[in-house]
Image 1 (cartoon, rainbow, N blue to C red):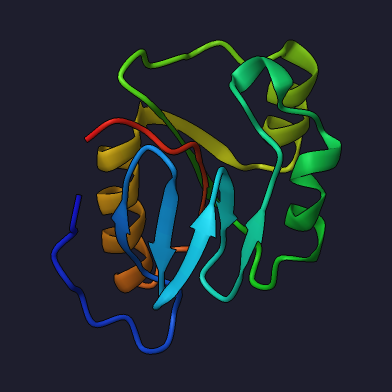
Image 2 (image 1 turned 30 degrees about the horizontal axis):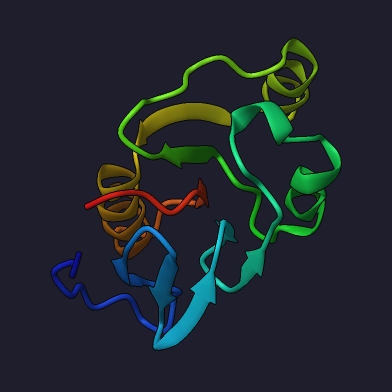
Length: 127
């Protein structure tokens, strides 16, 4: 699915996705990704149950500090994080949102374009 273009002043922008991966700032990514305003990291994430604190380690180096992390999953929205991961994020003052993949991509783009300190963990999904 193509996503409407937004001017982002060189920030990473998600331009499309499908059930295989994403196109972010002109670069193809197969599989799940962790998107920051200044970088994209491919991660080996099959569903929310395989998410680990180690996969979230790039948050430690984020500058500026990430205030919101958006989790984007396929049609069946999964909303339960392991309590240790939830506590890890909340202790770092990072708010958590869950959305369907397409909504998560659009929301990330909009908030990033507005200058918000946002990141997204995205799994490819059906359009």
